[in-house]
Image (cartoon, rainbow, N blue to C red; front, side):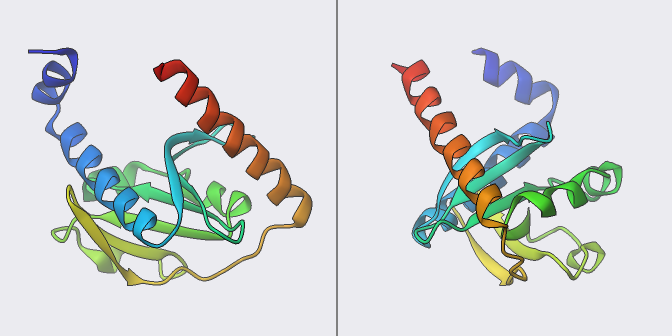
Length: 148
């Protein structure tokens, strides 16, 4: 067993969250949005998925593998200041009614996803968008270089 197998055997929620993230990232790609996982924002928070759209729009997707994960998380409102659109990505077994209405909703599995509820658009200020776009590009390039 490799390190990933041991970690996921000890905590199946890791597998669930990874599967949801993968499906949501595939959906974003199909929509023309390039996403990177575990993107650290200037405020120090780490978004599960951050996406950059073809017109420079910035999306954040927070993955929730279960209701306990959602109820324990108090940081998700902090993401609104750092994106144009915010979504939760959950499985089809997750009780959608507990999620706040001011967010978008993606239902995902390991192979794909669909948008169940669009996210309201709250445009970023131009200076913040520029800074985040630069950060996004540099972060993606650094990850690529580390993988070589």
